Every structure is written in structure tokens, then in C-alpha cells.
Length: 169
Image (tube, rainbow, N blue to C red):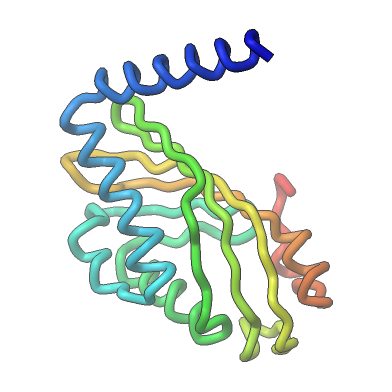
């Protein structure tokens, strides 16, 4: 037990020291990334994306074609939230390094309405996700996201359309 407590103490100190080594840009990037999840995705306040996303923003999804631009990203969030109005994304880990922020989250919600050809089920789901956000000029300009879509399908009792499955899956 003493070894375990010692290891935990050493890891805690290392994490605190790592936080002290963050640059002001990395701190800003972490705060901006957090707002994408808490304000845009979880609350549906897509107008915040005007402040957070840079010109030429591109989101690369694991299963879908890329979403290009602020307007398209706003619409993607609004479309999803129309189907899952109680959608919430809880961040469980973040790491900033240079112009990149890595985020792990757990998303939950209930599918109340149809979504892009997938019929509403009224079922609740919980899925893990992770992604990288790249910053340039103080804005998010590129994002890569992977969510447990298979687990979500199982929990909802649906199968996403075959047209959604893209190379690389």
C-alpha cells in the first residue's frame, strides 16, 4: 500500500508541475476547447463558435465527411441537438501541447427525434469520445474526432445507414 500511495503522490506532483509549465497560449486553448463542448455541444449555444472557430475551420469525423466552416459546424450541432435535445458532453481529460489540445469526453442523451434518416428510438445512450483540436492565430482551425458510434448504435437499437460508413472505419 505504501508503494501505491507513493506512486499516486509522485503522479500528482508531476501533473501539477506539468500544469505550471503550460504557456499562456496553451491555457487559452484549453479554455476555448472546453467552451466548444460545454457551450456549443452541451447547451446548443452555437453562436459561441463565431468566437472560437477560425476561418477555414474543418472538422474530421471518424464516420462522416468533413464539416467545413463555422456555418456548417453550427448546423451539424443544431441537427444533432434537434434529435437529442438533452445531449451533454462531459470532459474527462484534456491535454495541451503547443498548438494542439487533446480532449476525452463522455456524451449522453436521449434520441427523441429522427436524425439524418435514423428513426427516433426514445432510448438513452452514453458514449466515449476523443479528439484533437488544432489552433492557429488564437482560434480552432482543425479538429479530428472519434466517438464510440458502434456502442451508441447498440444502446439506441439502430443501425446507421450504410452510406455513413466511410473508408477508414
